[in-house]
Each structure stands twice: as C-alpha cells, then as structure tokens.
Image 1 (cartoon, one colour):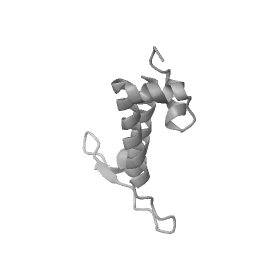
Image 2 (cartoon, rainbow, N blue to C red; image 1 turned 120 degrees about the vertical axis):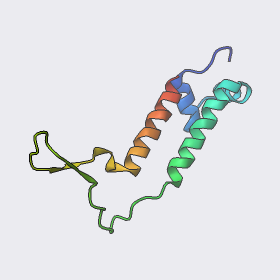
Image 3 (cartoon, one colour; image 1 turned 60 degrees about the horizontal axis):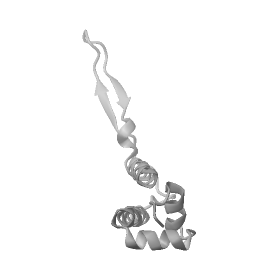
Length: 102
C-alpha cells in the first residue's frame, strides 16, 4: 500500500475487519501503527473503567450556592460537570474519533 489508509480503513482494521493490505501497512508504518496503538490503549482504558452499580442509589447532584448582586437570596445551582465518569467516557470517545479521522 503506497498511501496511508483512509480513516474508514483504519477503523475497519481496528475492529478486526480490515483488508490484508491495511494490516501490512499498519505493521510497517510507524505513524499508522502509533494511531492504532493509541486506539487500543484508549479502548483498554475505557473497558477497565468501573461501571456504576445499577442497584446503588445515585450520588446527590453537586450544587453550589450563588448569591445575587445587591444581596438577594442565594439559590442553589446545579453543577453540569458533576457527571464525572460519563464525562470521562465522552471525552475519550471524542479523542478516539479524532484519532481515527486524522
């Protein structure tokens, strides 16, 4: 293979469905081999992340108190970043997609 595989070809190879020419290229190309190795590391990291117990009660939402200018009553405000593990998984999936598309 004289050219680097397209993103779809690398994705198929990563999923075990690629063509022989793609496998040979990845084995001989440092750049493409590094992309596939990074995808494998990310997949292993995602798979090793602990899953929440569905029978456990979810933790209470993170809140902060925000006071209003002029001394108005404070009100609780939800923290959208309190998603924790879900946010990590989403960020890792975005990284995987970016690596495959580059």
